[in-house]
Image 1 (tube, rainbow, N blue to C red):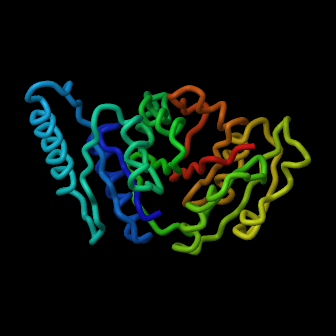
Image 2: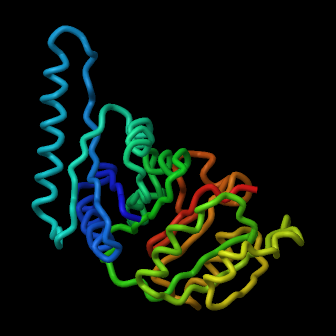
Length: 267
């Protein structure tokens, strides 16, 4: 994960700064580069407006630079990245040229009055991008990852490189990784088959019978006390249904620890 992208301004400024510091600390361990992103609204290109748009881009870059002054870069290369107009379109375009390995988003406030785990923009990014996503709780402070809980329904993974982010985390931090397989009502015998690469990563295995993957996760979180929760987002199944809508309600899913969502695990 050499190129890590973190959108700023999707939540309150203090939360964005806390998330940015987490990303920097995380990138330092991985030897990665951080792209700090904010969107600016580009004006229609006509007459002398290109020069105006250039000015707007410069203003956006300065805004990012101001936020960077209150974090400790710790020697990490942090690049201000103003992107034009729509974040959902701009990030995939940037990814084609620079191969982003990870997007880091912030969860909504843990205030009980806020019913959402992810807001409209963050939920849309998670739903529409094929880039792996790491979701950080509000004001979560980075610490080395010693325990990982990976929750799956099926061990079948057909797409190449799906596991690359978690493999890099395991190689960097050498954590213990427990695999929790949640057997729901539509569990199939073939779901017991494990991709060889996945089988070699885990230090222990446990199965659970629950109505949804999320219920199985909740049941075992306290028992395992992990520093990172990892899930596979498939086109079908619980997580596919969960992110059909852009916003994600806390009653449907919530994590108080960093959540790594791996993409492309389709079947």
